[in-house]
Image (cartoon, rainbow, N blue to C red; front, side):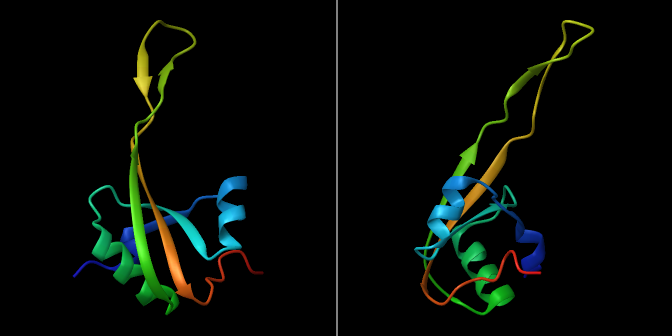
Length: 95
């Protein structure tokens, strides 16, 4: 079994994700090969909460042009997980 900390990479910090946190929905950047059951088990193992639903989405990396030359590159592709909890909350940003 994979380590839960290798599956959940980081929380998503945006206005939309903060608005969803109030209703018990959390957004994370996850490993690209992680499946929905692995994400659910990782969230339950790390924070000890009950997960009711996991939605995932793959985001394509943006295409960027270098400044000095005409070469193009891309930012890496990412995978996000939107996790809905049945009850409780995750203490993400506490001091």
